[in-house]
Length: 154
Image 1 (cartoon, rainbow, N blue to C red):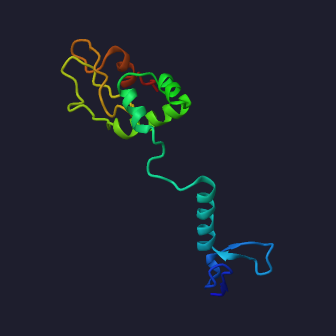
Image 2: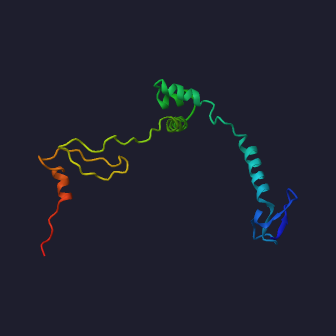
C-alpha cells in the first residue's frame, strides 16, 4: 500500500489514513486523519471552552425546585434562564429516572364468560378483549363477526 508523510506529525502513514482532496496534486489532504481530528478538538476547546461533566451548574437547583412543585416558568424567571433550558433539564432527568419497562399481565386469559379475542396492540402485548360474552360463547358479539364468517356456497 502506498504511504504518505503527514505534514503536521511528520509520520509516514498509509494513504487510507488521509482524507481525499482533489485540489491537491497527490489527491489527498496533507494532514492525516488523526491530526485532523486532534486539530478539530483543539479548535472546539478554544472556541467553546473545555467541556465539563456538569453541563449546567444550576441543574441540581432546578430539579430541587421542580420536585418542590414550582412551575418551570417560575424557575426559569427566578434563575434568569429560558423556560426551554429548564424544560430540557427536567425532561432529560425524567428520562433517566422514570423509565419503567412494560410488564405484561401475569395471566393474559380472562375469567370464564369474557371474550377471548386477542387484538394486536404492540404496546400492550397479547391480551384478550375481556368484554362480557353471551352464554356459552367464547367471543363478544363484536369479535364473533371476526371469528365466524359465512362461506359462499359453490
